Image (tube, rainbow, N blue to C red; front, top):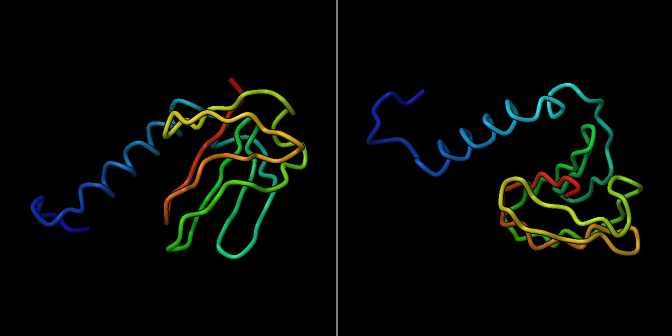
Length: 110
């Protein structure tokens, strides 16, 4: 841990804080069973209860367009709890916005 506040990378610290608050506010993100939905080339999507977590672990933007395998109801609108983005899964696919490099989204039905 870097203790000198002037050396902190504030954007990382703020992101970790947002994720910790989200985990505290939504206990199923900690306790619900894990189910992998998609995993390919540095991208991962999994469910924890009603939540769909999408991870982009690459240095490139990632278009969130992949098969959901029933992770979200068809035609139901979903919101990303981190960015506030909305999408409506269509044809069994998420079809969400691009995820920036090394980021994630936490989708839940609205």
